[in-house]
Image 1 (cartoon, rainbow, N blue to C red):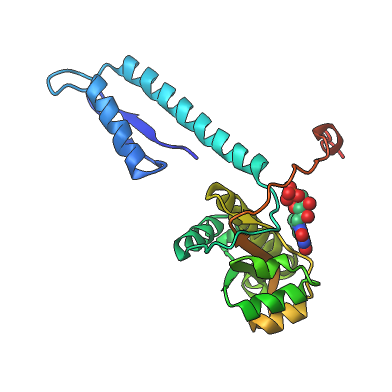
Image 2 (cartoon, protein in one colour; image 1 turned 180 degrees about the vertical axis):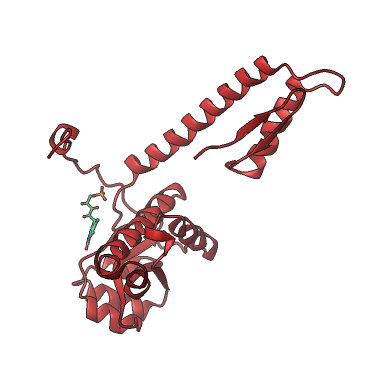
Length: 237
Ligand SMILES: Cc1cc2nc3c(=O)[nH]c(=O)nc-3n(C[C@H](O)[C@H](O)[C@H](O)COP(=O)(O)O)c2cc1C
């Protein structure tokens, strides 16, 4: 993310581009204003540039560290506290999901929010008896609309892009949940037709992941990852 960018003029400056939040942009403007801006004086451009460069560096580093911390700190959670997850939190997860990239910005994802115990039980059954699914206060089922993707990109859209797009959205859900103190698990092992029937999902839409969401009641150990040296090739495979 580019937190903000500045346009310099002879004796004034303005802010444009993306900012992380309105609060941040106001804060930034205020602090620049108080240091460099005086109604009767020209802005000291060199000082201003140095200040902005430092601010951008700090903010970008902060952002990157925050994201990396979430990526590395997240674990699959399969035990949940008996504590509700608010609608507001669920909306934040869906909001994070919808900002995932998608081929041609087609956004082929659909989300089913399940709170009813009976439906959660059936989902756990469809997922080969993974009972932690029904123990979570809320379950998000992420689906891929093959029709939407195939309209834009034919067979490749249907078989590849819509799954890739949806997977990116799913990962955003996991990371956002972690950032909110919630636990999730990506459940992919389920009988698709059974899940489809339970959730009344129409043909042409594929349930891709079942995500139980709740406050973690366990602190799992970090699972190992293949080392970088094993997974990276240079120039050719
Ligand atoms: C496509 C996919 C399907 C998965 N399906 C299941 C599942 O059905 N049940 C389960 O308990 N975990 C499932 N997982 C979670 C993995 O077991 C877990 O991500 C992996 O062991 C690494 O652990 P971590 O997520 O704690 O880093 C799935 C993960 C992915 C990406």
